Image (cartoon, rainbow, N blue to C red; front, top):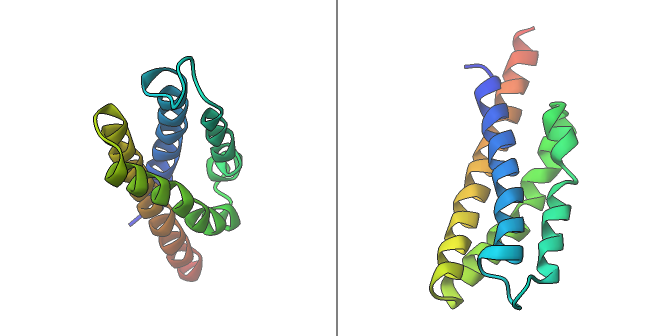
Length: 117
């Protein structure tokens, strides 16, 4: 199998997570009316974006651990909150899982491709 599908899964999941974070904290269900500073968490998601787009294996490796913070936030808010916030948190969990699957799959397939020569 090629690493390309995993690459695109990681890219799309990361971009969707960035947009979800912005929409969630600025318009859909912010902690404070008018938006909250939690929207800045989307800026943290920009850190691995260029490395993921350029298919840098090292970025894939460290971002697999980095994304766990967003997974934990989604689990906690999905468990503790209700209504739209809970649904957004569960969407965050789903996107982080998709990103993780894409990242791990990409690294595994890239290693196979390099070993095959």
